[in-house]
Length: 88
Image (cartoon, rainbow, N blue to C red; front, side, top):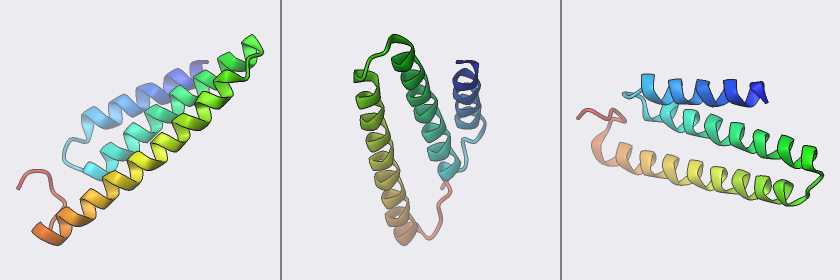
């Protein structure tokens, strides 16, 4: 449980401290989603409930879709502007 909290805090710090690099911001969001998924899995095992495991699969699928959409937006932005910098 503390490992999930540490991962979530690392994700928040990564998101707040890396405002210039959008790829690192996406990675920080992924770390936060994985920390929440880990916490849901731990609590579902503690309560002997399989619904938490189903929700964790949905969260992982949503995180993967979010990464694909974010990276495709970055590629389109790079093709138009020639840079990935947020401050243009």
